[in-house]
Length: 638
Image (cartoon, rainbow, N blue to C red; front, side, top):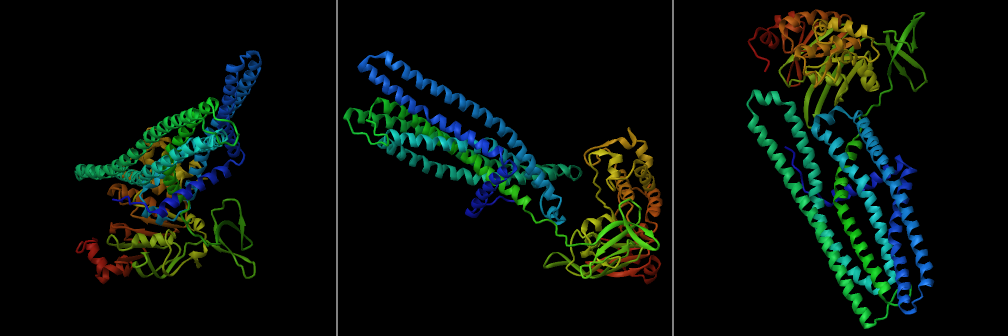
């Protein structure tokens, strides 16, 4: 099971750089709305700091009233200040309403675009990525990690901007009122800073580990759910519970520590603010009683009209500093989530240096002419950089592997000196024990992986020169493990060629021998399949997969244990359809059931990544070697 590790300073730096990237993306997605939102937030923040200036002026007028008793003269001044305050508050309300509505739109839009960018990039990733990453952890990028960015964009960032602007504006006003009291406040802020650094730093470490632990647990949960049948048949429930509880306990522990630190921060900061308020009131009282000369940017003498608004501002100041500290945890979580999201986005896409493409052609006066219409005749379009000429090579299905070596990991080769010659229309079968390298060979033909040494040629063209999408479009593939999508039976068959008509899909199903059971389904071809075709038997799912390959109508077919989940009677039905499907096609067959490969033109026996025997069924039986022993049951495949 994956273990969450302690984070290093470089990880923290990466997370915070990811936050900067989130902000840049937000502004690039919304170049007008984002600056408008920031302006509205700043305007609202500054307005919230201004009332203290007017309170001071009103209090100064009130102080004068105690001496002059001239209420008539004071009334218009007080009303004037009140009208200005009301106007500013109305404008602030408008700004707040505007930015909250814009933020709601931008947040969801931002997440939508980010998910699309992740998913679009994921489609370009090599198969190796999905073989080496837990699928549940990949799914966590789209759910848990994206949700941390929702909290960042919709709540943390606006609060950060607003509270930061208020802190700066209020600090400037306090300097305007009294330098001495501001210095006392600064001492309290230093205490707040070190508290945030100590407590917030602890929560940061554990929140980042929480993100990783969540991804690990989601990956485990997905794995356990997909393997329920295996778990139950082997009575592995208690062990599964123990494994899950171990992952869940790890998530609980890091989450508990993260939230313990986070829940401590708020009360500590609030009480420091309250204590600071009391200290300022005492110091201000001493200043008033002692007649200490005020030092300020305004030059105003120290009085009640200074102390009262200053204390209010101190409360506002510490409250917003506390609010800033509360955003720290959300920012740390978002940094960890953003780093994981961008790690997926930044994964290197599958490289494709091919320039030979597959095109529709028709023959005119003995010459192949490229056309847009579907002619069921294909050719490789090969541009030549030397002279600018373009040549067309008919798609025939001639596949040749010459002295191919391959390793999934550089120092652990799995194929050695593999040579395979499949002429158009030939049926080539691979047999051998599990792990001998049969499926790996077909993966190399598809270029799911690239070879380490040797050559693979398709119709005389090096496959490295063929664009991968065009190469794979010319190959039909039926795997042992089928995958059906949540859609109708008809659409699952049409997945083989999206422009296929209903009639072509039904014809392909009949060819594969699937039409009989499909017509007996509740809604026939319109029956909805869910849960990877859980409402069908394994054999029925395999028949649909074969029909999907049939509708693609490729010149080369790869059948990887294509009939392994079909009973003997059904196999006879499917085999007749498969024989029709394989007519005039180059076919590579992988099979443990040796009866399915008897009529192959060439049978190759693999052992530990090497071809140890090759020939027709009759030839290999006559040689009485490994194939003979396998076929007669004297030697098991495993």
